[in-house]
Image (cartoon, rainbow, N blue to C red; front, side):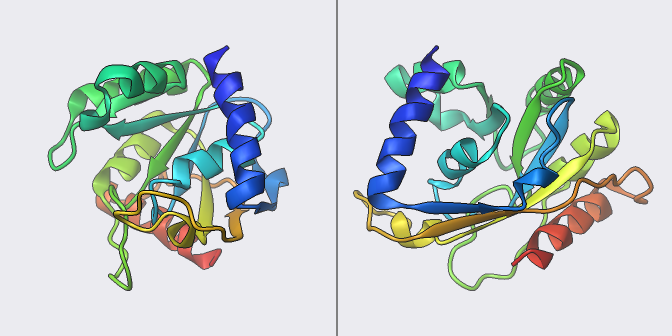
Length: 192
């Protein structure tokens, strides 16, 4: 119930502050588990992808966010905590359990927000999950959210945003988790 209330309220806020266009949504599978793999340029990215997707999303969020009211809401929205900066086996196991239940998990392949013109760098976690689960990966490229909510911003600035969804693919034949993550990241940035 909370998910749909937040979804509706977020749609209203988007009309006011970040009108969006979602391209190639036909690439989103209508059933079954898959990984939605995205670039990450703003704290607004999971919000945008949640309202662009035709499927309900689950996502990892840094453990620091799971405190108080925000933590309560995040859990009800389908998110689960991850410890960044180290291999969090608990979070990986939880993601694999959710894939087994047919859920969709949003993963930011770079691990944290990419700021400015820093070169993109894939983290091995996305490759690990894609290879261990065997689920398809749907790449998505987000653009403009960093203009609406730049790092450190306390309020929104009106700006149009887009999300472009690529075709689902598998990375089961990658020689390593790192290479699988790199392939996923390459597919994301090919949509730019």
